[in-house]
Image 1 (cartoon, helix red, strand yellow):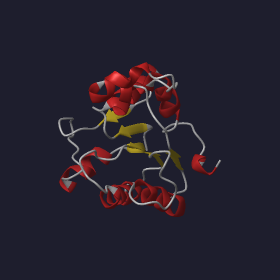
Image 2 (tube, helix red, strand yellow):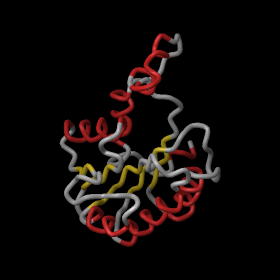
Image 3 (cartoon, helix red, strand yellow):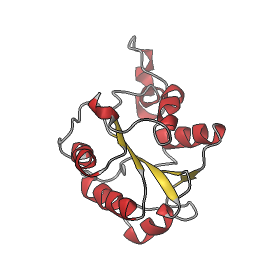
Image 4 (cartoon, one colour):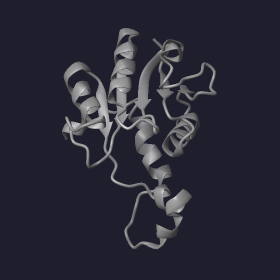
Length: 168
């Protein structure tokens, strides 16, 4: 098995920064999207197997257009485990504890069925307020960690972090 990291959501705010960080650190990765080679589309299960070939770790970012992505994500995770993927890193959210609807269910499943996993539960990201529709809120006094700093943390999660970080 290679040390290839699959980054889902690789064209989004977090995914593209994580891919850049992995590249900078010399970590082999596959940036997945509907336009990647091989293509990956959460809503087209026929694209899932090929994108998992040779992958040892996955950084899971939920599909943005689905209100409850847990069923799709769990099906991909099951397929990944059947293809000998070893490490799973889920990007969840601070207000979603283990077992909560949506990503909390994925978190719960990982805690019961995977031996090498981590769940990252960020609160906010500065880019949510400096890019796109919320840019006018960037004058706030609250300090949010820029994604480039979070990418340092995220880039190590698929490759070196100990499993079950969410329990600490």
